Image 1: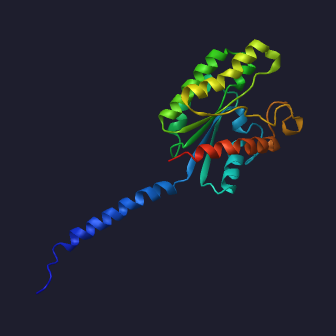
Image 2 (image 1 turned 60 degrees about the vertical axis):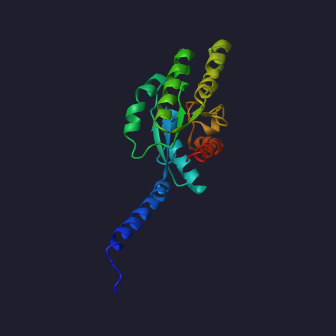
Image 3 (image 1 turned 90 degrees about the vertical axis):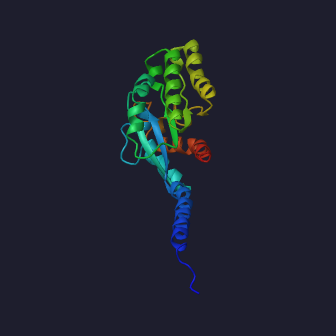
Length: 218
């Protein structure tokens, strides 16, 4: 007696559906991670050639270590923390994929203009909160006040980054220009911005912190 066939098609559809669902996590995992470098001229690659700025050098370094990653540069020369805060939403809206990690590097221009550390703290706090609200991990890169601004200002300014990182439960990289500040051979003629060799040092030193945060995704 022939075996009834009317139950085969529904069963086949169920198996195909289950197989498709099983592929979803794999497809999601296959998406390159997106790192957003959000800052001022230090992340914008001020006066540097193609491939010499922070974002492209960081992407190259991460890929050399086997990371499937895309680093998006969102640095604007001259930006203060207030100006960075004002453009967070449209930067996020312009991304092709959600940011997995955001490196926030702002505050140097606030300091150079002698602006209020309290205002910079409030702006950085709002920036970090905005990125966290979108599901991104945040690595807050610190800056240090110039000695000529005085001890009181320096203490107030330098404390901003640890305070904001602690309040928001995010990672902090103590000093973005570590290894480059006050090193003329690693700076442009202005004595402030890193040259291509300086950026390479910055990337090499911040790389472990970046990889640690990427490793916490998922």
